[in-house]
Length: 127
Image (spheres, rainbow, N blue to C red):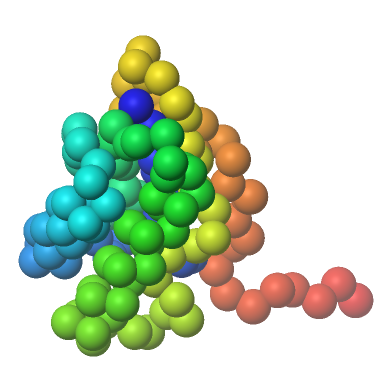
């Protein structure tokens, strides 16, 4: 069992309402095309958690790339507000393998792996 967590660019909380429902549908479609057994799916406003059982012929990197590529293409086409950011998903993701992980544990690892965010606004010039 693989546990994946990834988020949108700039940690923008854009995964709400219809977009979140559509994303879950897209994840289920992708899992079906890859012949994955989909476990739990959690869509929060600023991150996605997916648990899947996969055959050994598919690498975790290939699985997450397919989830992200297909969902990004569809969501950016259907929801115009998602085209305001340069790309929907960041390159970063966390994957853990094993049956004993809970979603909260994997999301905590993702949170600690993110670089610190700078404050909003223009940087101050020291004079």
